[in-house]
Image (cartoon, rainbow, N blue to C red; front, side, top):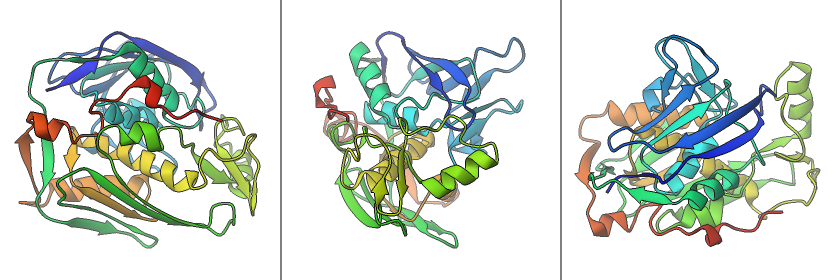
Length: 306
């Protein structure tokens, strides 16, 4: 059945790219509401922005959604991953700025906040998007696909020149709280040379060694080092789950990303919804509900962070 958070939870911090401070509050919502953002810093007009695949304005650095009036919210992928990973289907997210707080660069603070409030059943059926055919998209550097699977699964491959990252592969079944246990505390990562270049262009103004894994060749510059030896690929999977959550419901299928990013995953959702017969909507029974990412998760399952 559909769910929402039991009571509001707030987060304060700067945006990774804008550097602007913002307060964000996740509030309960009724069944069939879905996930919406509300810009509380805008005094009039259409301030509601749907967290939906067809509201994405593609950006290479983050996931940015924009409503029909041009009101945006950026860097939503981590909180969307947290909601999906905790099994929350309905929420109103109020935010007093254009970008979600980056916090520690992972989804763990959002997961902790959501689970501290608890998840409430709404006694309305949840429908899953069951993949019936394989759909793939690609660009010059990578590809992504969704394929049929009896459980939600994810595979990811990355390759970077820096020895601190290198080539990493990971495959996970995202059922029964695996996101909370295995992925949620993995932080965004970048190369020092890229950070320097972005700062020179006035980008990534809120980025620090405390909210991202910064590497320089074989060195990890962030205090405390890595939380996982393969933290980079785990974070890419975290991002992908957040981007897939914009489908509007849980996806029963296997996602594979090969050097994929936000734009490619969004292209994949467009392809799925434009391909006749690629999927069907299925009412979720108890057996299927037990195979979804947020089933039975507890706060104590969040990994300790560095």
